[in-house]
Length: 141
Image (cartoon, rainbow, N blue to C red; front, side, top):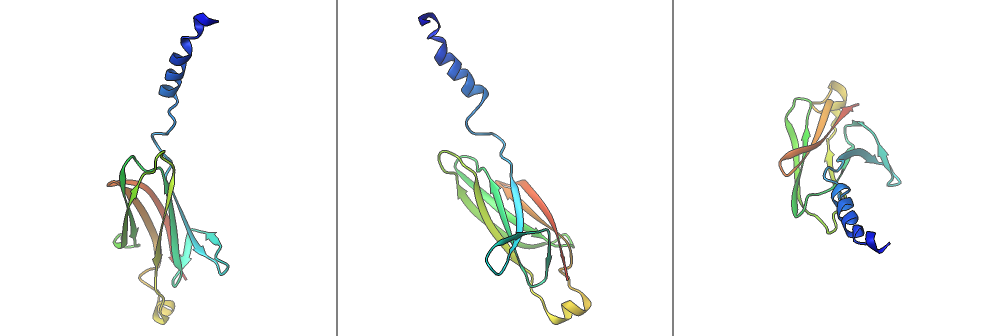
């Protein structure tokens, strides 16, 4: 038994190399929702004017500081709103969630003749100048 005792540190070293504790590629996820009257999240991908559209972005930040940008792209493919935040990675690294929201105002003419906000929208999230996630959603009546 003592002959094989020296193999234990080698085996541990090999397992750490093959199965690292922290994954290199984290799954980045965007969840769109609105808050109901009770404050509960109602996850959806279609919204109306006058609603506040919330987005939670969950990701595993890289070591050190990470720059996270939310880009709300309207149906005409123009950037409607932009939000950025700097995130410091905790030690040990763990997934973090960042909240952002968009409010599209509603007026009486919009309800009668239509709004420039109607159509297919896109939310792009960029981390350190690389697109990390995209989520499409609809805005209508």
